[in-house]
Amino acid sequence: MFTRAPGPAARLALWSALAVTLIVLDARFNAMDWLRAGVVAVFYPAQLAVRAPFDFASEVSGFLVRHRTLQHENAALREDGQLAGARLARLDFLRAENEELRRLLELRQAAGFGSVAAEILSTPRDPFSQRLMLDKGGNAGVAAGQPVVDGTGLIGQVTGVYPFSSEVTLVTDRGHAVPVQIQRTGQRVLVFGAGAGMEVRYLPTHTDIQPGDILVTSGIDRIYPSGLAVARVARVERPIDNPYARVSCLPVAGVDKSRMLLVLKTRNAPEKP
Image (cartoon, rainbow, N blue to C red; front, side, top):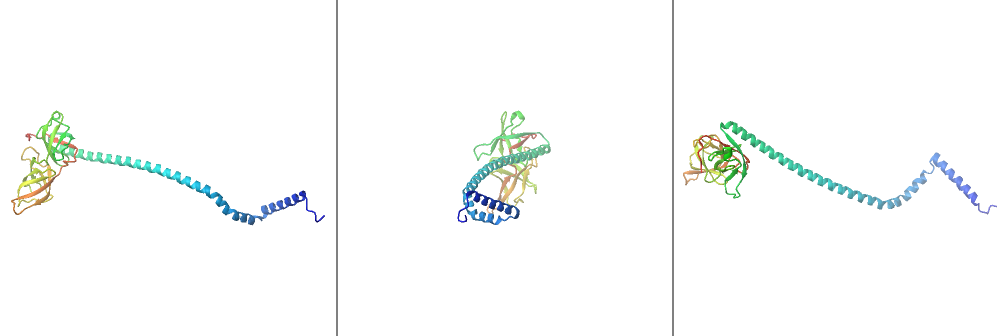
């Protein structure tokens, strides 16, 4: 009886009783925690090895998704930046135009005689030409000989009038001369165009003139009203072997950047070729 192995029913009953006992002990006294922790520790490397390909695939997929998302966001931000830059440039342009129009309005109110607001229609393709075209002509009362100014000073003089446009010779034209006076001292001189700039000719070397002096129209020619800023002295040279000083000037007005101009309807302005 003792040498015979237990039958299936006995083994089932034995293992069932053992299982119930372990369940009760684990549920009431946590008796199997050590075994559970040991099993987890033993199989943890295998679990990591099995899970590694899936984690790698998930990480790569997430990286690609994030990379594409960042690309889209970068493109959107770049486009927004370009639009913002264009709007800012437009606002700067409008602000500059508003300031220019305000200066022209103040000048018109202070001029004491009629004027015509005009916009530059075209500039010559020849970089050495010191002339430009305005969009106002005889139909607006523009006449040859009238001075043209911007918000800061004298631009030039109307030298050609057409029905709907007019030609202006700039003060920097080599054939153009303006009678002016040194604002600081009141000394009357002549300033001539010199292409990119201007120059005072036939000025004795002992004349009190220095860099930074402002030259304004004297009004003695009855073409330009007195007090219009024309040029700023940039350099004064007094050579020993020459009785005349070399005075280089820069125009005060924006001869190469102003867009809105004012044609002054001065009284008795003679026509100037």
